[in-house]
Length: 59
Image (cartoon, rainbow, N blue to C red; front, side, top):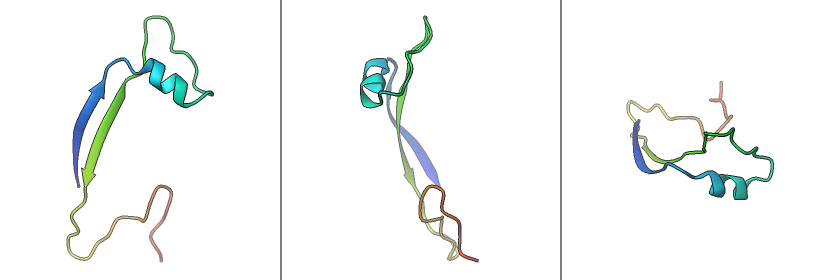
């Protein structure tokens, strides 16, 4: 798997707080950072990754 950072927003506090009303304000002097990433999986030897978050391979 290849993972590449696409973009970084070093002060995404307002965007994060607007997106989820349950998110707490960061402590004074802190901020939220938003990192955009891209992953590329290249199948090798017939092994496949799980279908999605929380999924498990069939037994």
